[in-house]
Every structure is written in structure tokens, then in C-alpha cells.
Image (cartoon, rainbow, N blue to C red; front, side, top):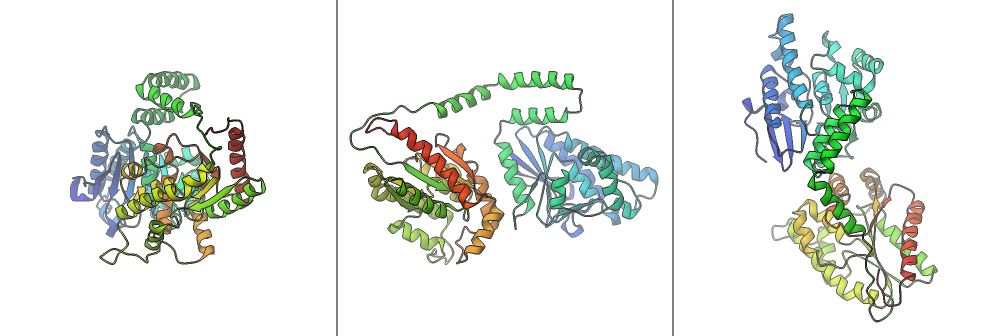
Length: 485
């Protein structure tokens, strides 16, 4: 990342690939905006407007908080009504320009956004709050009104009556209440910074085609138009996106993924099904694998359960490394590249010596974690493309059951389970891993993956898993002897 060159470095732009971070960095003043900072902010937004390769912008404060409004010590120099109005117009122009950026803008609110800081947050398209963060419109405490467009934006979001109540009382609005009111769009996970969560969200958005993101924002901003005018605009813009090459490429990819596989007969017994359970730590994959084994055996289906890391020699070494019992030469945990290579090595040894012999014998193999976990876990520490290529030749599962669970719920489950946590069992890291899991289609588009709500009860999750496997077994029975799905 390279810092911008805005005046006094109080406002800077950092690049994170297609995402730009706009950071107000005055931590000693809790990022309160002085007059020079306001000018720098406007200049930085103007620079962002010229960056055609930016697909999403995240606004954040330096240090541990968002923005604590205006810097009252500096602003005391404004002693007349006209001077105050000029300052208001400067910030209105800066925030209007921020809101007018053609790409999504996300405010990452850590700790608090007070007074003018809350007005800055409202100028963004989306707001992410840390779990302990809060907003407050404290202007009335200093006998002034809002100045930077905050009252208009607040009334549009929560309605005039609620806006007047919040402006008049100046009460704190916690993250949960902000989400309920529509002042927050997402809340970061337990122990996770809003900035980290907002960056992950920005990258999710940035994976969409740039012209589509810009079109979506334009349509949303045009919502106040009369319905006939908006529909005319929507039809015209839709036609532009429909005729774009990216649309036809996306359709081709979808049709290729959904094209029925051609059953190729081969000698020998009907091969077993390769079934995989995936999810973050605490998602319940191990519990569900045990329950599925019992269910399949009661149905008379031959089944073998296994897990990764495997019980083989490389898997044993890997488990020791994950538990911190094997370290590098410097006494620290093995480097991320080594961990990724060990997982890949264990995977191919696991396939050749355990998984594939059972499948060839007609036994179903139920595996707790497979290469999707490498992409999710090792992919956040390494180049995900490199991790994907390491595992590209690995046998593809017949079905992946992805137990998608809220990281906060998974954290409580891990705490209840007890034991010594492994190197990846860190709440903030698990939030990033959960996001990476939800992006698996990017790396394994042809895999048959079923997302299951892992927040539900174990019984409900089990019913969903059984229904998916039952459908696969029905398809398998309809195939000729010796066929594969």
C-alpha cells in the first residue's frame, strides 16, 4: 500500500488492490477535523474521483476510532456567522463529492462517530460498525445545528420524526440500534475491527464488474425520480449492461457449470460417493459427519469417515504444527507457505492411500474438510491463486456440504468445547475465513456445493445434509452399473 500525498498527511489514500482506503489520521485529536484537514479531505476525494481503477472506497479513522467531529480548538478561530457558514460549505462540498463517487463508499466506524463524524459516516453508501461502536449527534451540546449535510441524510434514512429525536437528544446509538434503524448495514464480528470487516466487504463488492457496480449505484441514487423516469433509466442502463461482453461471459460460465455431466461407463462396481463437510472452526462439521455416518449405516450404505489433516504421517506433523507443538527454526509457528504446502502434501497422500481405495471398492467416503478449507484458511495468508493451483489436481468431491455459521456463534461453541486453541482459532481470523469460504465459487466453480445454515440446531442441519445426500443417492441408483456421477 502507498500513502497519498495530501497536505500534512492528515488525510491519506491507501490502495488495497481495487479498494481505496480514505483515512483521516489525527489520532491524538481522535481524528477531529481541523480547517486544514477539511481542505485535505476535499482534495483527497477529488483524487479518488480520478482513479478509474478503484471499485470501492472505505472511509476510516486512524488509530482506534472513526471521527470525533470538528476540532473545536482549531475552529474557535471562526468567530463570525459567515466564517462558520463558509466552513460548513467547505465540508458540504467535500461530503457531497464523497457521496457522488461512482463506486460504493463504506464507512468503517470503530469506537465512535460523534457530531460531524457521524455526518461523515452518513455520507457513505454503507456503514459497518464494530460491535462496541456508537454514533451520536452531539451538535446541540455545543449550541449549534448540523452543518455538513447530516440532518438531510439522517432524515432520509430514519424519517423526520426519528431524526429530530436523535438530533435533539444527542443520545448514543449503539451498533445494534444503528442496525435496526438503518444507520448501520453490517456489524463486525466479536473482537473484529470495523475497518477489517469493511475491507472484506469492499473486496466482495469489488469482485463485481466495475461497470455493473457503477450502474447499480447510479440506479439507487436515482430512486427519488418519478417511477416512469426511473424505469426508463433502468431499462436503458440494463440494456447497456446486457450488451456488455462481461454479461455473455458470465452466462457462458453459468451454463458450463450447469451442463449435465456425461456418464462414462467404466468396469467394476459402482463407485462410492466422495462427500465433504466444510466450515469454520465451530461450524459443527465433526458432529454432522458422525451423525451422517450413523444414518448411512442404518440405510445399509457402506461408509468410511475421515478428516483432514489426515491420520497419515504428513497429517500427524501438520496437526502438531497447528497445535504449536512443531515450530520453525526461529521458534515461531511455521510460515504460511509451509502450512499450505503441508496441507497439499497431506491431501494427495490421503487421497492415494485412504480415500480413493475406499471409493473404488464402492464405499462412500465422508471427509471432514478438504481443499475448500485450504482455500479459506491458507488462502487468506497466501496468494489464494497459488493455494488453488497447489490443489488443482486433487480429486473433486461429489458433494460439498458447506455449514455456513455466524463467526460469533462458532466462537461460543469453541469456548464451550474447551481445549487448547489451534493457531487459526482466533476470532478475528475466523471472521476472515468465513468470508473466504463464501467466495469458494470463484476458485472451484464446477464443484457441487450446498450452503447450509449452520446457525440452526444440529438436528435441523442434519436434516438438510441428509436431504442433499438422499438426492445424490437417488441419482446414483438411476445410473448403469459402473457409472460415476
